[in-house]
Amino acid sequence: MELLAAIHARRSIRRYTPQPVPAEIVERLLTAATWAPSAHNRQPWRFVILTEAPVKERLARAMGAQLASDRLADGDPARAVEADTNRSLARLISAPLIIVAGLTLQDMDAYPDPRRQKAETLMAVQSVAMAIQNLILAAHAEGLGACWMCAPLFCPDIVRAILDLPADWEAQALITLGYPANSGKPAARKPLANVVVYR
Image (cartoon, rainbow, N blue to C red; front, side, top):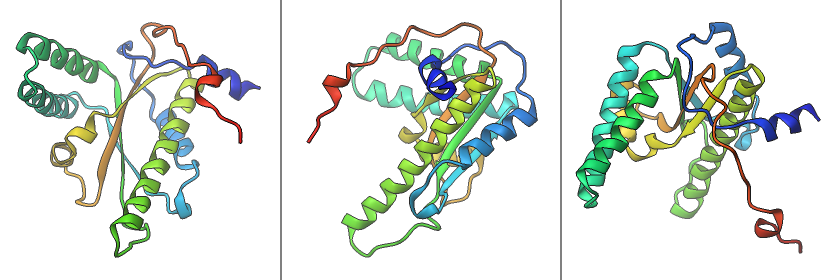
């Protein structure tokens, strides 16, 4: 029952107090993440911990430049693009802690045909997503706020270069973490009747 209550109470938090997250809590969050189920039990997740302002800012500015370039190429108004980029930059820089979650296919099965290889890659992606869910729920249990952002999917090479990651690490998401400065936005979910069928 406590777990169900935590699942219902969790919210995406985007604003934090300046208070740093203690290292022992970070280790507990990462341990919780690595106890998620994974395809073939290969545990393809990889995590990068960012606490220092300069590296957070370098990553945020590089990702923001790519976001701006993509949106301007789409024909979006420059003022809206600038506002969106600045908002994203502020969220990343102000977060006391960022965890970049990625995957590696190094220990996953390899197939000669694209159909099965695509399935194997998706299994690794799903494994990382389950680890992120564990991490976010563990953060909530620790009194922390967190927000899952999938922006690295749009610029994986930039993330790899800025963070000097191994060539086989593929960034999937980043999670901002810290002590909440607010309670987040009210949450709503579609009724089960809209998303479930029984056969």
